Image (tube, rainbow, N blue to C red; front, side):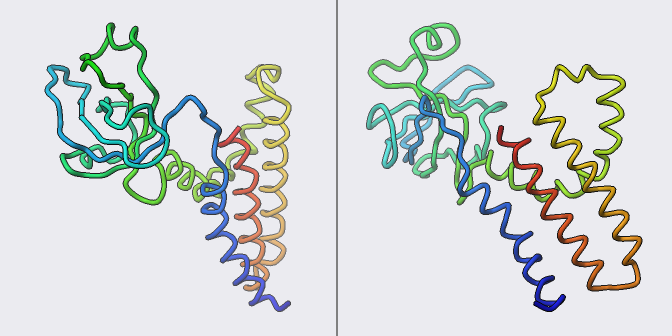
Length: 214
């Protein structure tokens, strides 16, 4: 395989890998309901933080055909302006208990109340978009990792971290130093330099996945 072909392959891998991760790796959250909701109408509320909507569950897992969506204007992730009358959005949320309702929320009788953690209007959930951004930024975020090792060993208590965390820091540190050495050694060879930087980028993304998901 020629250097040019390998460079093109690595560019493709760098672009596709984050999408592959966010689309295939999902945390199991059995306590949450995930469904497509048709917004019927907004409901009155005197709270400034919470918004309430009567919605019809169309697809997915949900407690009742009609539910009350509770949107937290600060903590609910996603495009909240899409929760308008007659809009359809995907909701990921948890069922509010009677204690939750009595303490913090308006109560609309005969309806299950779903506290929306995320609102999705595109292909990806908000947490997937955040993961995607973090993976694309990881090659830059990995560069200062060698300085973290010194801080980790001298100023922090190593026992407060898992062995996996320390191992990833060590591998990232080694990756940065090896990349710097190879870049200096091959600085006059354009295709070799591109290969080194692309391999570094892909490895930095791969090493960041455990930090973001586990």
